[in-house]
Length: 323
Image 1 (cartoon, one colour):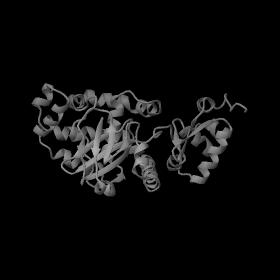
Image 2 (cartoon, helix red, strand yellow):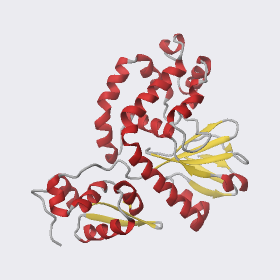
Image 3 (tube, helix red, strand yellow):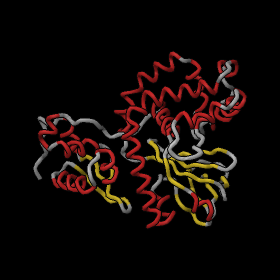
């Protein structure tokens, strides 16, 4: 397993935040790999255009094939931000400052030998930046205000949990392989890599639309752990009108949003409704048999029951079953 070695200074100064570059790279990974069910509607909406873009830009395709391995991604794609709330363009400044030899060196850690188009082409950093700009503009930016609300709600929830449960409680909820081991050791994944010493360094926890925890760094003194937010790609937008007529607009929206397990806080962020309003609607939908629920630590997660899924898919012909 891989570990971060931390000390009191690291933990006192550690922070949670978001990153447009991290969000863009996470979207790129989802477009490249099999995804969980709640990511499929988003991927289905963008994967055709993504494949067409790669077909039109062979260098982009070669960079991606060389940049992502089973347990490693090329460092130039994953550097954490220097400060919070930067634009994608500001975060790309580091990437575009790298020369071709540095790009090839980072890629060689993942794949050897490199394909001829990468060995023989110049301007690799700008090509990589253009690819990331395309992914951001076409697949992330149109939904960024909503995504950001979800991510910020998660950050606030983690920060509150830190004051109540300490780091062991916070880390326990970041991912299945992340945990506090004691003696200044944080397990970050199960890959067999040497421990990373981040004592006295800057450590950031980045919430993202991703399927698994990832680690990254900007050497020598900045490290990050990116973790997934659950349920963030549940169907969104205006619910079908028959469903609205059946349940009312707000309850229909909440039921549609709960395609994957989601908390009250995240539902409030994605729908724009107050926590009290969301809680009332969740109670009614659960009592009606349209939602399941279970406790996860101090949070309660909700998701569509079998009946709820049938109602969302065919609201006119499949009303809720009586209980």
